[in-house]
Amino acid sequence: MNKPNEKMNIPANSSKYATNDFYLAAFLKAKNLKLLSTEREGRRTTFFFEHKSNLEDLILSFYNNGLVEVNAFKNAIQDLKAIIYNL
Image 1: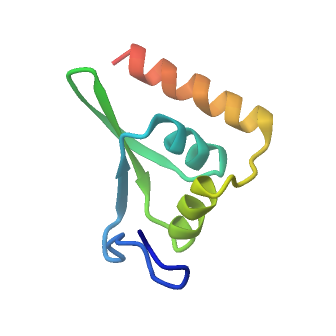
Image 2: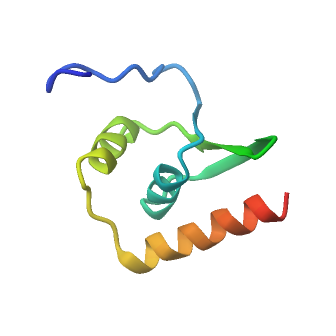
């Protein structure tokens, strides 16, 4: 577990951030991070987002009950489900 002032282990030189956590992906999309691509392996989908300077803050916000507009989150969930089921 990270200490409060420790940085998360996200490579700064990477242009993409990958996650297979559906609700984290929806949160990032609702916070206007650009979804670059997806990859499907069996039943698991990996979402690739652009790597922005505020990415780490957004991820920490998600895991600490960060706020997001309800409609934006709902729309992001619908968009990601459409991508998953249409792959």
